[in-house]
Image (tube, rainbow, N blue to C red; front, side):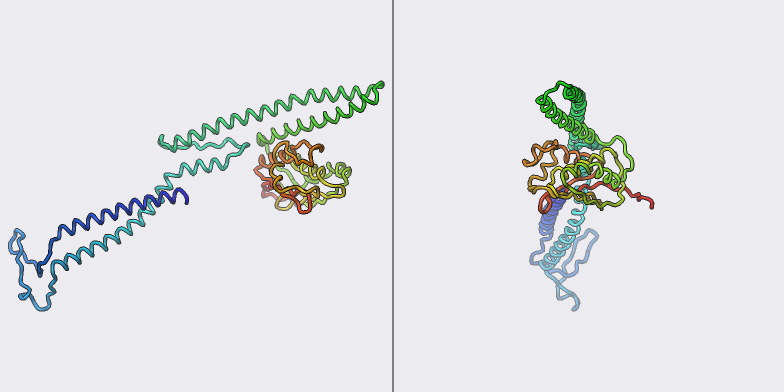
Length: 377
């Protein structure tokens, strides 16, 4: 039961208890005020201006006069008062429930603002604040505390992202120097076969490190959000990335099955190309010889492959940085592919989800907000 409903029920319950107590008190006072036990009453006639009354014998009244006893009059009066009080209480209870619902809604309105703000928050969007106006009560104190916590979280996240970006950027220079030195050593005419084998291994290790650094830089960039936006045809980007992955697919004996339609989004073209490229390269690298990569762009982008079986419980962990399946360890990937895809999608107010493909492989669905503009014919 929602809090507003519980508060309304409490208001109505307290009102009903107070109303029943008031009716009981009035009923008791009325019973004490009407002591008519055993009296015979007819018509009360004032005999003097001071309000004294005379009693007329029943035999002296006309034949059509209704004569009631005091007990009957008292019982009739008490019954009428009781039923009218109950009806009035029920009507007032309905009004009290409505007023309780309205008052509870106004009291809980600041909590709804806090909840709505919390739902809008993400690691990449910590700029939302409640900024509650009103008297300095408990709810205002709660909202201000929540805003202060968000300020501290935003500062912490920004510091972390800046550190990752700066560290990744600083590591690129020594890696580039190392690659140059290795290439120069391998190009020396007196280099032995052992040195050449060692140099080739070092170059491969250096290339993996550079890819990892580039992935971290891209992840840090997408986590900071989009600085600028422009219109991007997603279908054209897909076709370009498919061509870029053609040689990799040929070396792995993997074929592409592509079906796209015009799809216009607003965002960063470099990040969107990286999103699609990561999906395609992952689908090729973690495939089997003779397998296929299916690319469908309809209401959303769906990329699936025919690789090894992926356990359903392992799918959520694939979106975490450096998380890979056990049978994928040692491949050319760095474990950042799906993390970058998810980060770029969130930066474009989109979403990503994945599920195992029947018969082996993985199906990744990317939902990006499409603009209302259509490609001219």
